[in-house]
Image 1 (tube, one colour):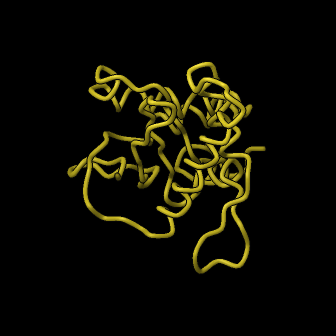
Image 2 (cartoon, rainbow, N blue to C red; image 1 turned 90 degrees about the vertical axis):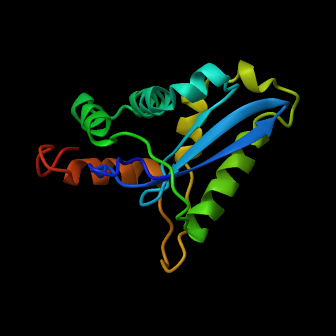
Length: 162
């Protein structure tokens, strides 16, 4: 699922998403193609699905806030994400990462914890704080670090922000 409009591509790039059911609750997991940055919206209702642009932006910003990203980078991400549009293009590598992220999300409930009792921003932070392999690359990616580097390189963020 690319986060872009047909007329105005997203500066942030494409995302893949999947709806999954955990403990009879619908969850949507978004994984950024380039960085493998992942956010998970748990206990999704039909009302939230109708406002998916808002919820992805909210999850992205608040997850970054939990990770202590500088405010300027969070704002850059919000400005760069664009409108959601859906298509059938898919990357098997990103789908593999997305599948692993969903398994990681499910693992937080294996001890009987209710999925709705878990903080969604903290869950997303945890999902981004693990290494991910990418087909064709020898070294793994750390999604939180990779997204920060991507945002620093976007126009208007300055050359070196640490």
